[in-house]
Amino acid sequence: MVPCDRDTICRTITPGRTPHTAESHYTHKMSFRCDALDHDGDGTISQSDFDQAARTLITAFDQIPASPKGKALIDGAQHYWTRLAELADADQDGRITQPEFVAAAARHLRDNQQE
Ligand SMILES: [Ca+2]
Ligand SMILES: [Ca+2]
Image (cartoon, rainbow, N blue to C red):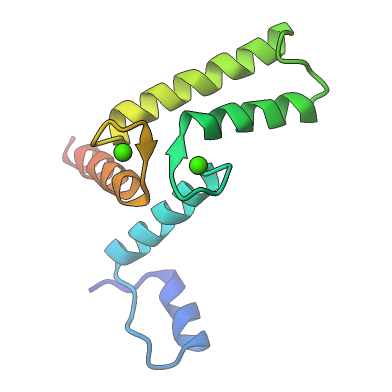
């Protein structure tokens, strides 16, 4: 087992805690990223999360969805969702669960290490 940097923090906070392995640290990190993409907080990633994120950005930058920049953001979010769903939505139900996201990230990491 290879302890990660976070392990030192966890042992300080919770003495006697089982050390994190590099694998468990990676899973934790990917779970955090999955949560960050879950814009509506329903526990899964869906096209709706990307639509909402795009609209939040459009509003933050004083744009409207029908403007060229607004359309570009919406199109970009749609493309990002489509590509992510192709990679991670294993059961193709239109929602990416945390296990699906973590498994896809691990596959991607493994594939990149083999190249
Ligand atoms: Ca969601
Ligand atoms: Ca799914």
